Every structure is written in structure tokens, then in C-alpha cells.
Length: 220
Image (cartoon, rainbow, N blue to C red; front, side):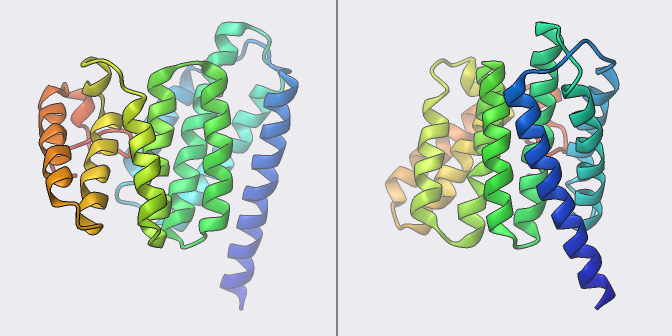
């Protein structure tokens, strides 16, 4: 039907945009550009994803990601390059999350991989943890608890200091680890992880507790 055809076209556009951005990142053809608005845009998207329908958000994210791809293909400044890779990683992670909710785990994994590659290009540990923590939800959503646990353990291990364990991304990773351990029947380990989750959440500042995919609110 018409609705299915439109969704198919949108998903095809998502695939094409992701592939083109991957090539642009690999070629490193980026120059200084106006990127401040993208920072604001990404934060708004992360907040909107909490309440908006996934297909609506996917349409917005892919459209803005396409605009970002154009910037990535022009920027040369190393500082701007890092910023654009970071935004690519964050928007890619959000797209993966929305595809997961829509039940398209194949595309969700592909976007998660692209987001991880972009995050690693920045060499920003917090960003790498942010992308990987969200990625835990993909196998968890599809019922693969063992894979989800492996990813959660790896994400938690990225946080080596007490400062690292005071970010929303770490709280998400350790909380999901507790949930997965409960599903697997590892009650004692679950309680230990849940206790660490509570301690880490208590260390979050107000910005870290925003109601956003990249935050960890009281409600969440």
C-alpha cells in the first residue's frame, strides 16, 4: 500500500545517506563550516526522540543527517572535523535507536556500526561510551540477552575512573547491565550493578538528568 511504499522509500534513503556519509568520513574531505546549529539540533532531536513517533523522528533525523553529510564533505579544519564526526555519531546513534523501535534490527545494527566508527574517529571517550551504551538496546530489544550483556560489560569497562562513571551514558550502561543480569537470573550480580547504577545516577548533574536519549532522567 501507499504507506508501506513511503516507508520503504524512507528506509532506502536512510541506507543511501548512511553509506554516502561513511564514504565522506573515510575520505576526510571536510572544511570549516557553520556547525553550531547542528549542536543545538542534535540536542533537540535527542529530547524529541523520547516522545515523538519513531517514523516521524526517523524522517527528521535522516533529513538533517543528509545536511550534515554535505558539511562533512567540505570541512578541513581538524577542530571542525572532530565536531562533525561527533554529530555524525550522535545522529547515527539516534537513527539506529529509532530503527530498533520500528523493528528493523538489521538497519539498526548498520547505523550503530556507522555511529561507532564516527565516534571512534573523534577519539572522545565519552562519545564512544554514549554510542555504545545506546547500542546495548538493539540486542536487548530483539531478545539476545547474551549479546546485550557482552556489550554492556564492554561499555562499562570503558569507564575507568569515578569521573567517567558520572555520565548519563555510564548510568545507562550499568542500568541495562543490571536489567540483563536479572533476565538471566544472576540476582547477586544484578543487585551489585543496580547499586552502582544508583550511586552513579546520584552523581549526575542537572544537565545529565535531562529527559533526553542522551540524558538519564529520574523518570527514565
